[in-house]
Figure: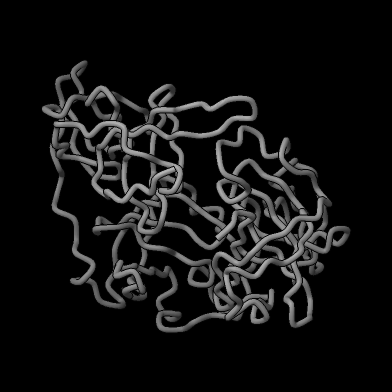
Length: 356
């Protein structure tokens, strides 16, 4: 498998993957580079989005057309049924050369040709942003580490949970997304708050299976407030703009102005024992949970101490295409993993089962 290094968007690619019984090839279109070793692509067959490792891609064909727009661009699109222009966001570039947009007004998808699109305004340069500047943004996607918000800048800003509530600890309410400690497994899992019981516990429903559970609020962590649903409007402040080691600029946001400049509490999981470990060192772990995008593995630091839970992304289990992760492993399986990325300050531990 050849490493794909071209970071231009709107190029058609073929992703060669190994199925269980035969070599299968899938065609996809690159939408954008994610700023790491992955790309956002859309499968040519069904248009579904997918985040793909560059190591599992090879160039099939370089389109001669130079696309003016890419995924995430804010545009105005011409709606032919009413012969009017409406604001929208580019969802993806199609292999036919057309664009799929999502209308701001109703969230519906619509296919347009390039001549039916125009940019709304030039994006705000990150270098022009300063702490405490206020914007009204649109909530984009939420991940376990925070929620991305579009404020019209060159890239979306990250709104970490700590910067969305007053004080040291959040007050939970119905609809909040959280990570809660499940006593039987001694692990944290994602859930939705159904009710604050007023006695130091919350009634929650696990995200994986909707099973209800009573959780201790002292063993819960906020992921996203209920009101920060995708597509909703939110007033935010610029918290900071920093440049990563790879040279990419990142934008951090806050809804609580008084917290700008603060780092927040340390993660409840101690990952200091994994810092400085070589990526070539193999550790024994136990599979604790399997999701569609990856598996969580409990692994102990070699120096001793409490085990921590790390994520093995689906692409890091083995070479080739994996249709269902449950066909590759089961809960309680013992596996060997190595450290791919660790950030003790953020509580992030990423693992791999692939060779270095």
